[in-house]
Amino acid sequence: MIRLKSLLTEISLGSIRPYATQFTWTQEGRAQWETRINADGEPIIFVFVMSDARDGGEYSFAMMSQDRSREGFTVSHARSAAAGNINYLRLMRTAAEAMLDFARIYAPGAIDITGSDTTSSTKDLQKTRIYRGLIASNAGAVAAAGYTMLERGGKLWLVRRGNADASGINTPGDPNM
Image 1 (cartoon, helix red, strand yellow):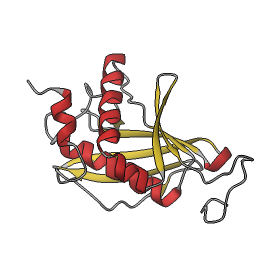
Image 2 (cartoon, helix red, strand yellow):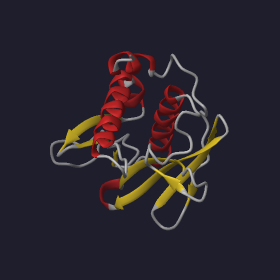
Image 3 (cartoon, rainbow, N blue to C red):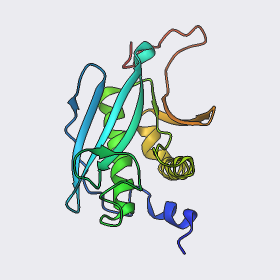
């Protein structure tokens, strides 16, 4: 049996080759960005949806795979055509690369990376634990992108660190001025 700690040790950015390291983000509608990759023949979509435009934007992250019916995409592990057909460690490494790429390019104020699965709250929690471990084991890359991990109200966030002084005014050198 593979333990979560063992799994997370292997997910660090240096130990497993991701499916993709370069992403082309396309805007879908007014408040959604997405990129598509091929993972061992299975299409995967990484999506960032803006939920709040204040303070640089607050986004939610989702990873979707093709539904078993091949007619749409899903966040559900149980309904995914990719389940059992792709290397999950490589996919998680690729998800981390996509999160950091999006953060570097668009510099949102916060990204909700809480796990989501439409069929099971147990899967939601499992995915959140995996994301937490993934971000924690890659804290250096996350910090280099200008972010930190924050847990609040059952949610897991990547939050942009600011260069504001005690008055809340941004200091010189802050790219968000």
